[in-house]
Length: 200
Image 1 (cartoon, rainbow, N blue to C red):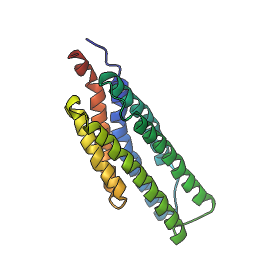
Image 2 (tube, rainbow, N blue to C red):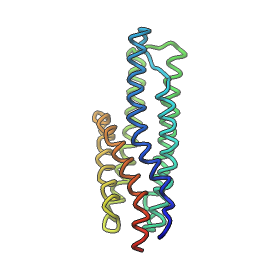
Image 3 (cartoon, rainbow, N blue to C red):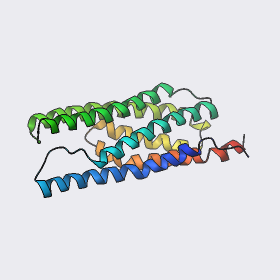
Image 4 (spheres, helix red, strand yellow):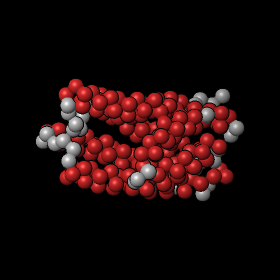
């Protein structure tokens, strides 16, 4: 039986599906505690940010392994550049989000119109950008859907839905729900690679 070289990536992708809602939940709790205990209504840097950093780091590895799988198993390089763009977007989004939080905390800024407008512009550009990238990834994958297994096709369909939600900006919060789903599907794609290899 062929050894599954993607089992680590599969396990980490599924771990991402747990990390994301956990980090998101902790960030909400941080905000509630800040308001209730300290009457603070500004941005908070805490444990959730560490979890999001770990999530992003794992995501970089998982995406690189996904590109490798497509290259080796399907001899497909059509989204190599888009995957790299997605990786850099994730890293820059994480860095800039922390930077904006730290800047606001250092200046003692609490939510007000000017801060809200800057954050709104930042989120709009970020969501529009990654939404377009996700749509392009999905469209290019669907061009070769006859060569892909059912999980890869499901990944493409969910990615295009997420991309449309992100690009709309207004509906982008709904795309958050799809992130753990996408992670689980990616994990299953990797973990099933051994089974796929046996038919070659």
